[in-house]
Length: 540
Image (tube, rainbow, N blue to C red; front, side, top):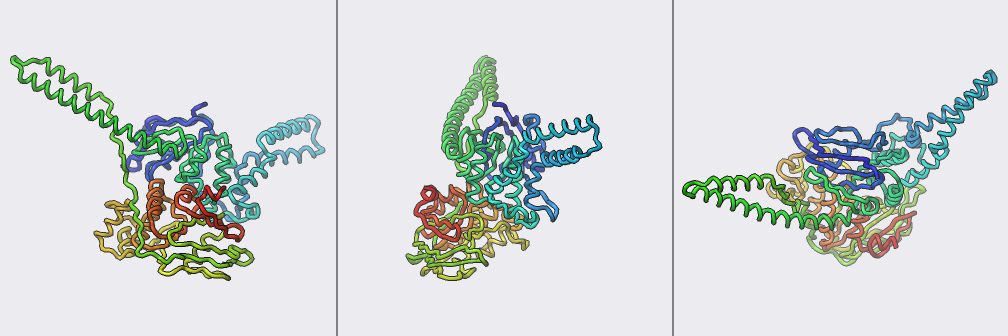
């Protein structure tokens, strides 16, 4: 198995800040790799170097010569008339050029003025072009476009829509489809499951697993990583550590390695202390001997050199700082928290809900799943009273106090700092506010960041801080794990498991659903089905 990517002691800086200090790794052809690490660990920086957009400050980076690399760094701009189909067909630019060349040759072959040698030369060119067109899958272009776009949830009916009119998530999805159609030999995917519904994620899992390409994936979707990757590479403290296994096995192995490393560190520290004490004694003996004996000092110097050459075991960080989310309720609600009775909802001819009925009792946790546009967020908005059902009723039980975490991609731009925004929302004085914000990883100067400049993960943590302060007894969460790194997702899951109240969440995160949900509300073709158990139970 050949080496596709090799990094040796790679370093990278942003300004004065060192992002990568000593990254050494090898990635072999055909391997499926999960690249993980906390926000800011340098994952996207490494991707930019692998794609050729940046060069390492120091160290060496080698990629197999001539390998085609596919990386969706940012959504490109297209002219106003460009359709979705134009973007997808753009993946076959060489084949389309070849097809156009064949059409020109066909016209020439019909020219009666050509001499026999000229016609023979044109026929030969056409035959060579046809062979190449067939070998490179020219007759499969439409079928491949349909297969990939349907798999990612882009129906043929939408192919003539203007690309510029799509939402940011839809543009990303179309560009991902176009990238997959190019069949690169090295595929770099940065959070590919964002903006995909569950059916599309399952299709992408199958596509990646069946692909012969070398695939490196940045993802916080743990279920997805378990399904597709053969190896985890973790970026931590500027270095890369490889684990030849999927995500769940990596978690267990990392814990074992940390324990072993800590034991080795403690043993070495004891040995270092013993050697240092021996050196100190030898120097004292040399100084006290009469006449002075240089042999003691030579022996001490020799031991000191050996100590200096000793490769020191790095003290492992056993407990890294993570979000401290402690969800409590001010008071408990009545037994029947939410009742849906024969609910109908439609937009024009499109029926989102028909005769939907469900009951959520105190202390129960339910996850709403369904494809993009199935009506999940609309259902939440009706429960919150932001929209009215066309027929039927949605009733909240007695003493129900709702805490809502909306799916908000971007923070507001009102010029406020994190501290100012939190003090206002939580009605809290500065000292107490700074203490609370520290629990959500906003330390020191972080509290003076502009809210409008926060990353998606930072904005999610800030809104969770407010939710914790509100102390509701019914949590309504719309895609709560979006933008959170794995550490923050796990902190959220632990807090929700301990929460005594009731939870209703919309989520595509199957790992999260498996851990949190006691029932699944699935929305499909206007029908709401309730299944007891988590996502695995629902699949069965």
